[in-house]
Image (tube, rainbow, N blue to C red):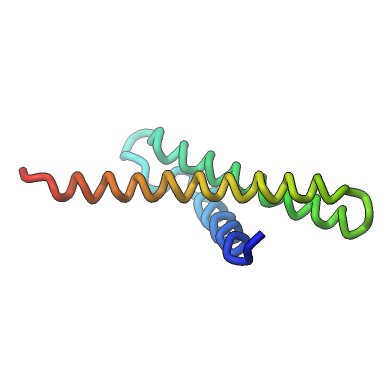
Length: 103
């Protein structure tokens, strides 16, 4: 696994920590935003996958986990990060297209 992917996992975990205490920052006034909930859930999934990877890799160091388990956990964590990044890129692209529309 590439070091940059691990850095991204840590960054998304920190972003999830920043969102957790305040609930739904950026939500529409007077209610919860479904998109904010979706983003929060996705970041929670990334955080959970990264925690699973860290636990599995720690277990492999002590001989309690097989290398196949470590590779599976790493692949799962990497897939979750790539999914969140792809969704983020698509949302930004859609936003830019909306901004370019004539009024």
